[in-house]
Amino acid sequence: MSSSQSGICPCQGATGRPAILYALLSPSLRARPSVPPVPGHCLCRQHRPVQLCAPNRTCREALDVLAKTVVFLRNLPPFCQLHPQDQRQLLRGCWAPLFLLGLAQDTVTFEVTEAPVPSILKKILLEEPSSHAGSGQLLDRPQPSLAAVQWLQYCLESFWSLELGPKEYAYLKGTILFDPDVPGLHASSHIGHLQQEAHQALCEVLEPWCPAGQGRLARVLLTASTLKSIPPSLLGDLFFRPIIGDIDIAGLLEDMLLLSQPAPAQAESRCRVGRCWQH
Image (tube, rainbow, N blue to C red; front, top):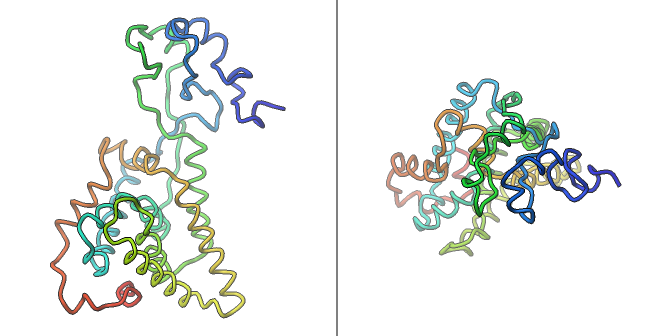
């Protein structure tokens, strides 16, 4: 069995440990031979760190997507009328797939290039044994890998191939936003009902009673299921950290929503989810 088939990078030994040169010269590994290997030492092309080719433009487009996400939530009375704690929990649990749907809807494209990194030998020679006592971790935070970014681009391209309309995107966002399985919710059963309404609205707009519509609905739901495979940390590191640094995206959305959210009107409280998302 090859190293790639077994899930071990070719740049590492059969046990998944760093290359012999690194093991021999690294003072931290000599001091702690039983410490597990650090993933950041992988030399395979797919695992090498990458960065945006045009970070300023891409970050600006990503911030625009966040702003549109806030507008969507602000104009969604069923969400605005939830308990504030439930709003925060849903935002923290669902902001990443909502953001990805926004990228897909706005057809945000981007390219990446390999990020410059110091050689392993340079890291070894500059490493201070005392600074790694008890941790075995490098001080610099790893950047997104090529493999992770390519999977993100594949997911976006899958949505573009579906050619969804504004209503379909809106209803799909509703099925993702109102997730009753998010921990810490006060009204999980009510939120589950809202999710069912959103799903029903999505089914109706896709016309599942037609054979072509049934296949399209299955493709939409299958593609949507891939969104949760993309970690929120990847989105923050790729789209925001290069320009605005480390930031709590969910907290930023909370602040933006708080500043822009109007007081809910009594008449809006009776609006059904399917009708509200059409605006």
